[in-house]
Image (cartoon, rainbow, N blue to C red; front, side):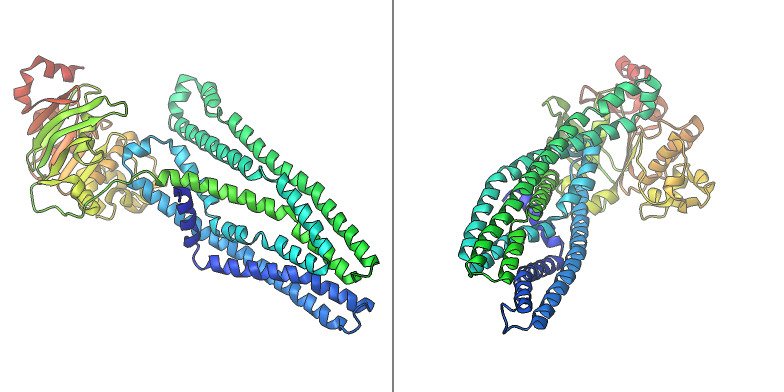
Length: 555
């Protein structure tokens, strides 16, 4: 079973009891639909006197009852289809989003954001129709089979005529599923590429406007439109071709049934009511519209499942169940190596020990590996070789809650998440002391609803955003990692934040990536990174004697 098939079954199960309800009402409606022509034919025969022993009123009552069953079954089926789809879509989106956040950041970064959004919003909506589609696919053959049985019972020659027409119809439709599948898959892929380019471009809108390259970027973003048009046109061409064949064959099949039935009526083998029923059975059994619609929906569901399963097939990051023992926050990197996608070493055999409660400043030229070392230190990225330990426990062995409580990150360009400012800062904790430590409390107090102000309504500078992100990072209990997290602060504010980080009251272990010589001078230790290796570790005054070290700050 392929991953797409497993996801399809998951979507069917997530629809809950609506799946069996849909199956029951669909079968009930189909049964009523198959019985109706026979009942109507008996009513006609009773009315014209070809079946004098039958009561017209009784058969008319049966017709009315069957119509009522069809109406109720149709209403329940329509509502159930929407309810089942909504439940499946919600469950699939929940599953996909949780899996995305469980992936290694490198894995997520390899996919355009717009493409991922398209899969979560668009393709999952298609995959969520799995339950009603499976029910429809399982019952779509009942009307033709029931019609064949009924026509054969009325007159075997009618059954033979119907079989020949359906076989011809099947030959005309034999390539529909393959052609439609290829067209829909190509359309969804082009749609994801277009979304990815659009999101990427919007993120750099200011740069594009400043560079005057709007027309060039518009052309680049819209490049997938040609493929989108091609695959979309192919989809509708396939559908139109199938509909055209059906539009030609259906009337011919019904005319053939009428002709054969007319001969049988003239020969006395059929009654007028039976001929009327035969005509209705021919129309019901050869109805191409339902079959084509069911096949097209099935193709879209399968394509949506395949696109979503492609993301779910990526292995999630593994965590352990261990909790940290009491300790000061000692950080150790043992033989840590990280390689790029091309195999090039980005960090090479890094050995580093940061005593608990110490302030370590990481310095180095651009591209030396400072940010990567910071990412490895708190398990934003797992090393390809070696291990990282916090108070003697390898980070992969920690439970997620233990890791996230112990380690906090502050970034140069933080992304703030949460409904309110308080939620973005505290993430469940009291945001006020965190905001005080990050020198952002006064800014929050000036907002209309202070910490309850909706985050989306707050206009803020880069420095204010950076301080809010820093306040959130200060929740860390043992290890605080800041990757150039004060670069957008003015001198006075940076002094307040630096004083808080370097003061004796902070007993956490602090790893700070910075190019500020003043911060390096206040640090307990400085790790000098060059070419993916730690060139030296020691107090700033001891390293300052090396002219290459001094050059790091000049550059």
